[in-house]
Length: 314
Image 1 (spheres, rainbow, N blue to C red):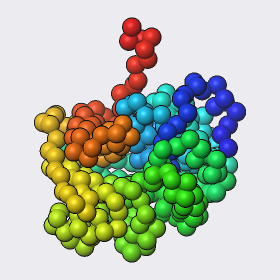
Image 2: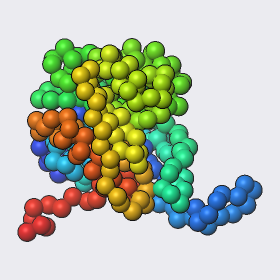
Image 3: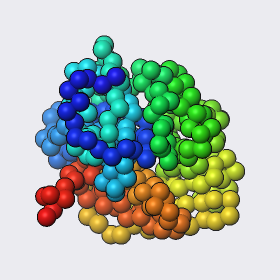
Image 4: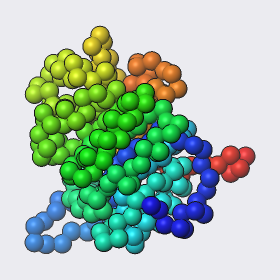
C-alpha cells in the first residue's frame, strides 16, 4: 500500500514491464585518495535514491518502456521514493513498512570508478504477498526480478509465487542474480532451482563463474543455457556476451571517460530488454545493452539523466 500523497503523482502509461526488487537510499562516497584506517580523508559525498531494481526500472523508462517498480520502503521517506520513481517515468507500486527504514547502501567509489558496498536492507526484507498481488501482472509483457528480492525467505516466497503465476499466464520472466555475495549466501543449486524457468538470466562475470563453476566463457554459456533460454553476461570494461544453446555473441563497449560504474549493469540490462521488447534480434539487443552500460558510467549515480518532456524539448 502506498501513501495517499502518491495519488498526486503524474499519470504514466500502463506498464508493459514490472520490475520487482530492492528500493534503497544510496550514499555515494568518492574519497580524494586511499582511505587511511583510524584517520580522516576528504571525500565528495552524495545521497541519491537507489536500489538495483529501481535503477533498472528507471533505465527502462529512459529507453521508452512503460514500466512499474514493486518493492517495500519505510514510512518516513515513502513519498520521496515514490516521487523519485515517478520523476524517472516509473510507476511506483510500493508497500510500506511501518517499523523499518528504507534500505540504505554506502558505495565507496575509487579513482577508477570501481565500487565497494556496505548495505542495510531495511524494509526490503519485509516484502510480502500483500505487496505483490497477482493483479500487478495484468497487461504485462515481462516480469523482471532482481536477485536481491530472493535473499530473505519471506520476500523470496512472495516473489517466487508471482513468478510462477506470470509464467502460467505466458508472461516472460527475466532475472538478474545481483550479487556473488548473495549467491554464496543462498547456495548455487538453490538459486538455479528458484530461477530455472527464466527466459533470460543477466549475470555479471563473477556471477556467471560462480553459477557455472567455470571461468571459461564458453563453458559458462554451455552450462547456463542448459538451464535458461538465453544468458547475457556482463563483463564490465570487456563488454558483454549473449548465449543460447545455439549461439554465442560478443560485443565491446565504446570508449568513454568513466566517472562511476554504479548502475552500468542495470543500464545494460535495460538497453538489452528495451531492444528485445521492440522485437530486435539478440545481436542488436547486445549492442544496445553494451552502449547503454557505457553511457551510464559517464555520470555519477545509478540512474539515467532527467527525462526531457516533449513540451520542454519543443
